Length: 306
Image (tube, rainbow, N blue to C red; front, side, top):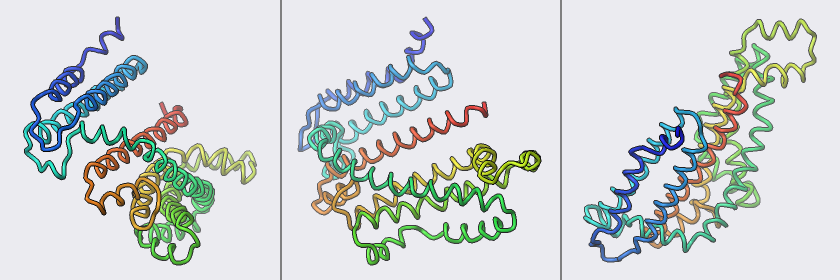
C-alpha cells in the first residue's frame, strides 16, 4: 500500500500533459514523428516508476518527483516553443521528436564516440587518483611541508588546464596522449587539494592515538588518514571529474578525431543543429550518470557518517 502511494505525484500529471502536447498540430517546416518523443517520455516514465518503487527513503522519493517533474515539464514546454507555436527559431532549435529520431539513427556512432571519450577520461582520471591521493596524504601529514605545498598547489591549480592543450599537442606524440595528459592535470590538483585539506582537518587526538600505538607510516597513511579524509577527498574527486569532462570535450573539439566533443564540433562545421542538439543532450546525460555513480560510491564508502 505504501509503494502504491508513492506513485501518486504531480510528475505523472506532467508526463501525461507532455505526451498530449506531442499530438497537437505542428507548424514547423520539417515535420517530425511524435512517436519518437512519446517513446522517450514513456522510457523516462518507466524509469521514474522503477526508481520510485525501488528506493525506500521518503527523501529520495520527493527528490525524484521533483527531478522527473522538471524533465517532463521541460520536454512539454520545449515542444510547445518549437514544433507547436514556433516561438523560437525552428532552424536552430529543433523539436524533441526530431532530436529523438536523429538520436536513434546516430546511436551506434554516439556509442563509439562515448567509448573513445570514456577510455581517455578513465585513464587520465585514474592516474590522477593514483598519484594525487597518496601525495596529498603525505604532504598534508607533514605540517610544514604541507603549508608550502598548499600554496604551490593553489597556484598551479588556479591555472586553467585548457592552456596546456597547445603545449601538449606540440610535445606529445599523439592526440590520445595529449588528451590523457590534459585530463590528468585537470583532475590532479582538485584531488590533491582535497586530500591535503582532509588530512589537515583530522583531529590531533586521532593522529596522536595512532602514533601512541606505533603504527607504521603506510598504516598511518592508508588506514588512519585516508578514511578520515574521505569526505574532503571526494569533494576534490567530484570537482576533478566534472572539470575533466569539460576539458576533454574542449580538447576533442579543438583537435580530436573521435569522442563526443568531436561529434559536436564536426556537425557544427556543417551547421547541422539537429545533431548538435543530439550531442549536447547526450553529453549532459552521460556526465549526469557518471557523476551520480561517483556520488553513489561516495555515499556507500561514507555510510559511517550517518
